[in-house]
Amino acid sequence: MKLMRHGPKGAEQPALLDAQGHVRSLAKALPDIKASTLSPHSLQRLRELDPAKLPLVDNPGRIAPPWSGMGKFICVGLNYSDHAAETGNPIPAEPVLFMKTTSALMGCNDAVVLPQGSVKSDWEVELGVVIGSKARYVSEADALKHVAGYCVVNDLSEREYQLERSGTWDKGKGCDTFGPVGPWMVTADEVPDPQNLAMWLDLNGKRVQNGSTRTMVFTVAHLVSYISRFMTLYPGDLISTGTPPGVGLGMKPPLYLKPGDEMKLGIAGLGEQHQKVHAWDPALIDG
Image 1 (spheres, rainbow, N blue to C red):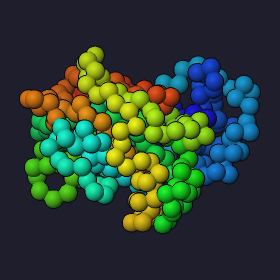
Image 2: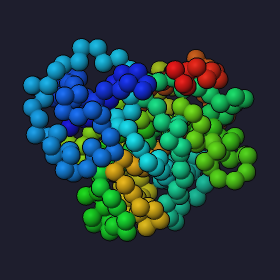
Image 3: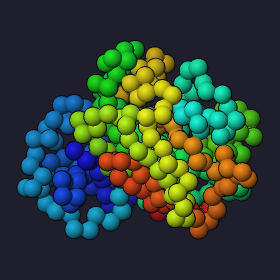
Image 4: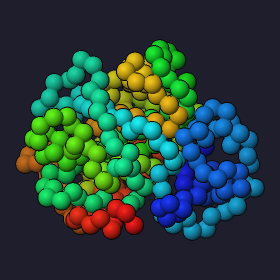
């Protein structure tokens, strides 16, 4: 299944994408797609619905994050060896973890708003792993059993804040609008091999990232197992698993986002995102 939500902020409606690419309303089946909806039992109930009998949504409008109630937005740094090389970092011996604020979360096509004074904001297409059942000290062999599905993430980053302002990476990762997710969550049963997904990002019509999850340093199963040793993972938690090479930081000279830029990005089978970059404007964040 491809689960999604649509509508203006604060009034999102649940839906799914059928096999023909049509948006079908789930409003009669459930009030919203919440973290609890991602449990194995709840997903099985949704699978029993006949999409052809669900109402068509002719104009879904804004595409919202695929579920509400995300508890944790966990990210993995330097998880592609060629990306580590382009940023001048060694391949890590263990996964590098940091947190992205849930207030950074936004719909896949919502406006990206640069922080005040930002001159080094960057892009990162990433595979998102959505947790469906509680995971605590799980083995790598059992880790994927705790995954509800997968989605596209743009792990936007303000590199000056991240690398030059002391402390952890979080201050450059958690800016408002720096966490586009979606357009939908594809349930795990439709992604037989998360380690074989092509991924890409275009900036102003030029391909800048072109990679595959095949080249991850640490696999999805390893990451879920590893992270569950340090924190309990709950339904609705999201793990963003790292980016392939081609980010602005690694270019010579570096290239960063500016107002008017447009990003298009996607992962095979998981959909595409399209964002336009804007100068600081709180109305675009809160509206």
